Image 1 (spheres, helix red, strand yellow):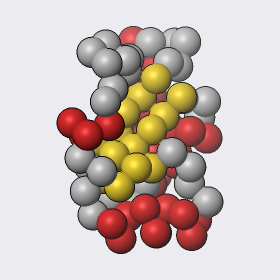
Image 2: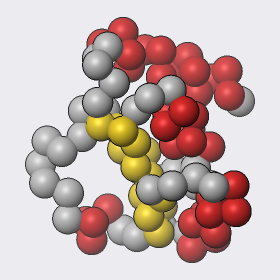
Image 3: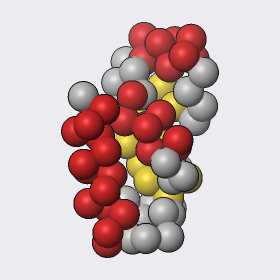
Length: 81
């Protein structure tokens, strides 16, 4: 699975080499989010399932929000990916 995450992140990095802000919407337990953060992305995750925040917290994954996207208040254009 991590290999698939690296392939997806590699595609984004070819288009945006500066590694800007990335939103992982519907991020589950945050595995893709965690991988993006480790690769240098300013990454956040949003997930409706409350179990996800707990699973991510137990693994030490920061910036995963158990919320609805519209409740986060991100301005238009806030994320690059």
